[in-house]
Amino acid sequence: MRIATSAYPLDWFDDWSGYEAKLSAWVAEAAGHGAELLVFPEYGAMELASLGGAAVAGDIQEALHEVSRHKPASDALHARLAAHYGVHILSASGPVFGLPHAAGRPVNRASLFGPNGLIGHQDKAMMTRWERDGWHIVPGDGLQVFDTDLGRIGILICYDSEFPLLGRALAEAGVEILLVPSATEALAGFTRVRVGAMARALENQLVAVHAPVVGTAPWCYGMEENTGSASIYGPPDRGFPATGILAEGPLGQPGWVYADISRAAIAEVRADGGVLNLAHWPEQVPQLARVTLHGKNREIA
Image 1: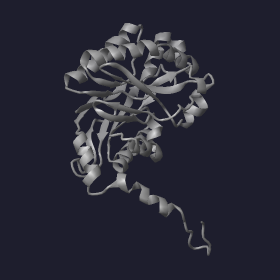
Image 2: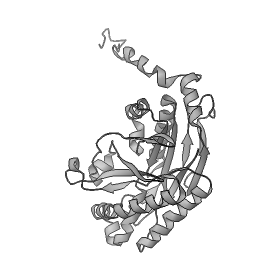
Image 3: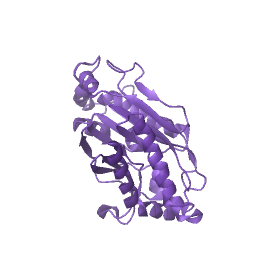
Image 4: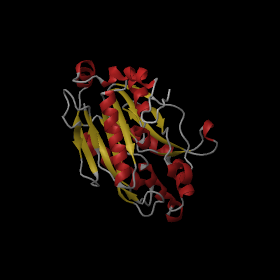
């Protein structure tokens, strides 16, 4: 299958039609290049805060509520586009209020659509410091596995990708394609997510798809500067590039990046790769039972 992953800039919209035109053009371009799975970034939905005007977009709490208000219409638009082009789309994530466990605060939600409509949602599991302390976003309630015509898909949103046990749980549930939408202000943050996505591809012998926000949005609180490049990674092993990079776009340049991937190649490397990280994972456990400290005449059990 062909995967398209986006380096996506945030734009100002005076009305809904501007957003609809932008999203429609992006989806049409990727579908026109033969993509079957399209991936948008974390917090790409924050551009919808512009629909509330400058004062709303410049106040984080007002912006969160404004973006959440447009979620139903955004979902309907994504569903129509996925059906029209016969593709799967991971929507850009954004805040969603009203979940029973969230005590009035929003989760950070990405939604997956297929040709037959909404498949499901993934809410971010691990909050960064600015999400905890500034935006007051709360974690979701568990990990989702999407069994689709393209294979089993899992989603780790940005910071989630830096935690190996989350990726391992998805791999053990059969995930072959891991989507990693991100939003990072600085190069260091982008690098952390990039390294995390590549590591999850290595240790779980799967394909990881990294989609970042890029460019500036000085009118949107918390999204003023965004650094990244769109990339698609696999395990650096048989059937995949030696670097593990199937495709990678230029840093900071908006647009789609494409790669053709094979589920058969994923299955083959898991069964008979040069290394077998996925299968050998449980062998770590006995080694963890005893950690010994040397040099101080004592041991740590």
